[in-house]
Image 1 (cartoon, helix red, strand yellow):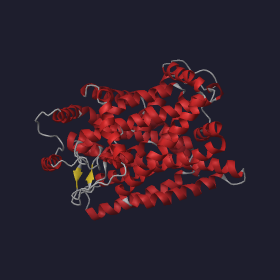
Image 2 (cartoon, rainbow, N blue to C red; image 1 turned 90 degrees about the vertical axis):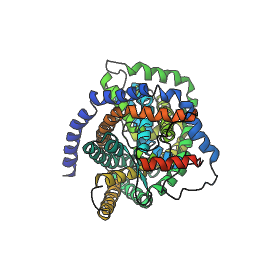
Image 3 (cartoon, helix red, strand yellow; image 1 turned 90 degrees about the horizontal axis):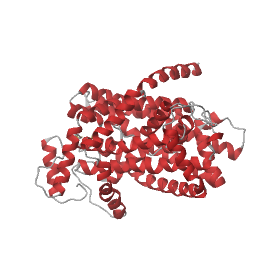
Image 4 (cartoon, rainbow, N blue to C red; image 1 turned 180 degrees about the vertical axis):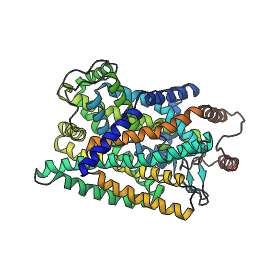
Length: 507
């Protein structure tokens, strides 16, 4: 019975996925990025150096230093907001997802991941700018924002905002399912290699899923502050460890680097079926797999990571927007590219096929390069990548629930949020045993649905993004103009006074 239910779900999802990730949506994603690039005059290129100098560089310099917290609003630091957002994006999609894209779409899919990331840098920037500009503060001082806020209060299409919130809830559950599925798959494979055959892998996966669910529940209960603190501790560690190992592996096969880049570029525009041992895929498949995995990985266009950024203590929308530029760059151009090069320099693509298990191939990639140490390290890196994504998306889903049921009484809304958290945690355990490809496909569909209302709004408010951007850089030049910090006059005045007071953490 369970198998027939899953088969029915798969059939429905395949139909819906073909629509959601059809050419119209792909053109919408690229078109939105192109429009925002034009309206901001290529900000992701012109201001890239500044995005480093005003975000990650000063953050690294300030590590270990104590800072005074703002008592009037319940917020998190810019780095904690960034870490939560990057933990939502840097997940299994950066390792297993890239491997899956190459297996099912060929090496050319990597090129289209880069294209989606180039435009995604300014798309994510714009999301953050609008997210902070239209965020709201409740009576307890909690700052909340996201795509549904700027759709509702910027575009003023409440019905579309509710759709965006609904799709965000579904995407949160789907994203959690993908991450848990990959954790259980990788650790079950490790367990099998260490102990040998004898234990039912499905039982092992379920046990792992339950353990992950319990740990996640403890962190999720603590809210955004606990999520931010956990993410800010784990993200730098796991990212640095992965980067070091990937560079060593690629360096070991340095003579294959030109060949790897050659495959990426030559297969990106291959209108014929991909040759060799890979199953045949047309240009349409290559670009769709690359775009879908690119958006899955860096989340630019989804309107998800902006939810975490909106909880930041900074008063300047543009400054948090610059974190978004670096976020997408780091996620795709660094982590995903290293994974792709590591995979393509390790394997001969003529020996690969699309029906290979992506998580197993990812683990084998590490074990081929580093032996038992690689297997053990992969069994640490992937679960950490995945786990931080799970806790970040729990917050995204929670905020979507709060917005969607904003018309209810506060007490009722709190109970609904608790119910969502319980369901979210239970589904973490259940997702551990579902077939890998089905989980990927379902979340691809949810991501596409979530992106559509967000992209429509970004196009409509692209002029406002350009105006807020110009306002910020004009003020940096010393031009006397009224700061555009919030869409609401009272909050704009409050934030203006904060900036004038000279508090560097708020600026």
